[in-house]
Length: 271
Image (tube, rainbow, N blue to C red; front, side):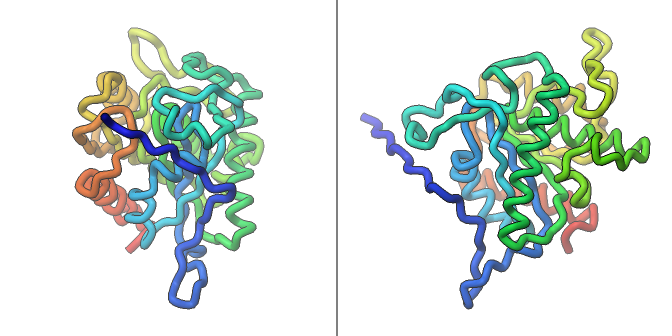
């Protein structure tokens, strides 16, 4: 019989990577914003990303944000993370497919800004350069990256049209774990980006790393995001033997980290 271990979530997540003198050595590193899946929260996602975070630690500081909307626990959250509530979602209803309205976008931006401010208060100074999202969080991460791309194209520096987090350097790439479309508009123009049979109105051109579990029941949706929503030549793909979860085995995590380091190096973010 398989026994499941119930996880006790820490009251306060630790961001530190301590040196020999006990000082946090990650404060100066470029930062990656991490967005959890629907029906979980930042504390759970930190646990799910523990191996990824450890492997990225020499190069990046990870910042975990809580979504704005209360939610029932998502699929697979209970019983392992039943003690880790309250659970949250990036959209008002768990499983919602309609894009957020202007108020929903504002609340997402506020949550991101709050997470970055909290990290600043801990002494972090690195620019926010990347996004890492799982499932619903990957959809939001890709949509944020698309907004950054659109802002760059039109030279929009209006604080009202981008999150406070974006203004700390600008997102340069995204790691999309089990992400699916359609993406949604997050700028002033909330017109639908999905034109149905005609495909997306605009495609992501900033670099994206797609991580697909080959036993994920939603795999074709994840492949559709890569194929239809991203400009050919700007994507990297990591496939691993798993279902709808964050990879934790050493060989799978190593493959993801290798792609992140290659992208970041090509962009001049790390050396």
